[in-house]
Image (tube, rainbow over all chains, first blue to last red; front, side, top):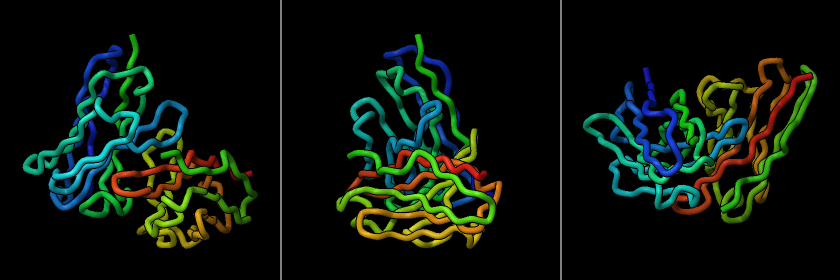
Amino acid sequence: QVQLVESGGGVVQPGRSLRLSCAASGFTFSSYGMHWVRQAPGKGLEWVAMIWFDGSNKYYADSVKGRFTISRDNSKNTVYLQMNSLRVDDTAVYYCVRDQGQWGDRRLAIWGQGTLVTVSS
Amino acid sequence: QSALTQPASVSGSPGQSITISCTGTSNDVGSSNLVSWYQQYSGKAPKLMIYEVTKRASGVSNRFSGSKSGNTASLTISGLQADDEADYYCYSNGGVGVFLFGGGTKLTVL
């Protein structure tokens, strides 16, 4: 069945780095745009980043621009989120999400279960 | 870009109808045919409910409907049931590479 499984979350100190991975299965991964969406504890959803189906374009929320990098490996059916210079306010559950379109501009059709990132000293 | 504006909470009794609004600007909700709505139970991942303003996602009850007027999109749930109690979020694109969520609305079924 269609599935997204995130990994890589954990506890990290402010200023350090972490890389999240999201393994996709059950669909043709290379045909869809992919997003990362996060949710701070007790807060609402925040869109973080998106990458086109072929990896040729990437977009970021202002809050993470210059610190986070989204990438994908279509041969491994995996999307990544490299998070550098982490801050306490980056603490959140990070969801990997498949769009319904190639360019990530249709709708957030399939969600992973999320992985928790805690930034704390 | 600012988040879209939703009421923090709404409530209704079983069998009643409720409407959740999502207000943006002419640069996002007002100019987008791609507004979508998501339901999230506590501790769970969100689930797509409505897409392209009015279309129900696969398996979603016809008690859920979406609409839009100007810069405001709306989600209406009719015949409220206990398991409709959840958080609801709207989502819209706001230009190339700009994606916005509403702040979320907590629905309480009395």
